[in-house]
Amino acid sequence: MPAQVQHKDHTLLHLADLLPISDRNIFYQRTGDVTTQTFTTGTITIELATETHDIDSINDVFTWSLVDHDLTINDSGIFLLIGVGMFYRSSGAGNNNVELALQEDDGGGFVTIPGALTYVSLVAEHYGTITIPTIVRAVAGYKYRMRARRIYGADTLACSTAGCSLQAICLIGTPDS
Image (cartoon, rainbow, N blue to C red; front, top):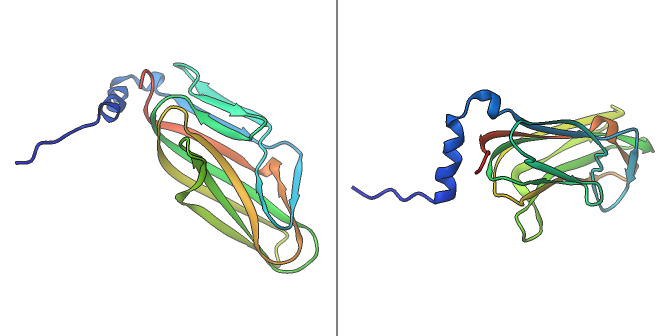
């Protein structure tokens, strides 16, 4: 029978399961304000200016950068991330597609999380909303952000940041991960 080898950081994550639910209620949400970000070519980082929830009964698990518009997770764990983007045409009436991606930086630069990339078509409808849920195993210091770009069409598009949000819910891990 082969021996089972466990990494000490992965073993520590499971110790949090022994805590009462009141000590594992760790949730963060950030939304946009009334700002509108317009774009035609290139990629934009979704700017989320308002912290709406920071429920953390143990310690400061989450840090938001208003400069880089990214979320840093300060403790190791498994997290459910939910990114929401709302887009519309600010000029023109053509068909357009908008792509939204959740990206992770583990210290080597931001890359799109596998399975956390999707798009919405702005055809006859004026608005389009994208929701991306994904589960990640984060190590302390990992950063997350949302990026959008027009992948089809010629119109000027806008991101209604009031309809955008990024949520992080701790599923396993912390405190003292």
